[in-house]
Length: 199
Image 1 (tube, rainbow, N blue to C red):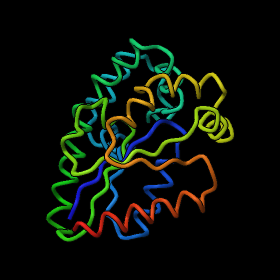
Image 2 (cartoon, helix red, strand yellow; image 1 turned 90 degrees about the vertical axis):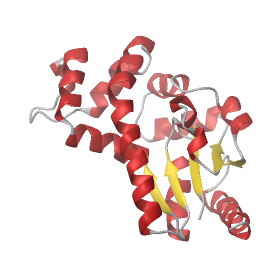
Image 3 (cartoon, rainbow, N blue to C red; image 1 turned 120 degrees about the vertical axis):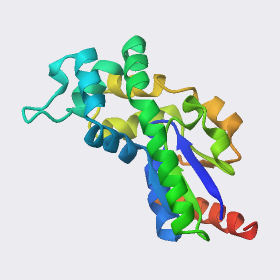
Image 4 (cartoon, rainbow, N blue to C red; image 1 turned 90 degrees about the horizontal axis):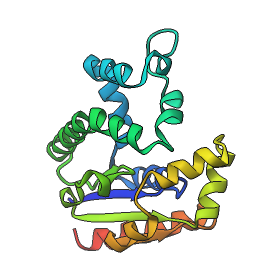
């Protein structure tokens, strides 16, 4: 069994990599899903967010409007720091618990934690290997704009993380995703085959 930290900048294709690794047999733990679980299962977190950012971040039914919150925090460093200080401690506890549970339930499977902020959270030492998905800035921007973001919103999200070049320096394995989905899947399969040689 190995525990893989899967990361990469916005628009690089990290989610596609996670999806394919799951099809290959990995247990995938999603950082985004853990974030949603924090909001859904710990009412005090949502209350703190409302105190920090106002009721405008809520939908009419009282649930969190993630898009509205993203609009507020991306592009405003202090707001992002505030968000992180509220959400990240309980989020990391949930991820840690999911890793431990998966190790018990699937002792022979590869576990992949799909999370954009592995380095920013300071949890790289949780993993046996760090896999970084990388792509050029122009391609990442294009993908995010095609996904519905404005160019400014996409740029702000890229700027909110440490630079891609720094993630690459810290990686154990890098997959470049500037081409087609088929091409990147072949690269992911090669990574999977290499990984399983050492298990």
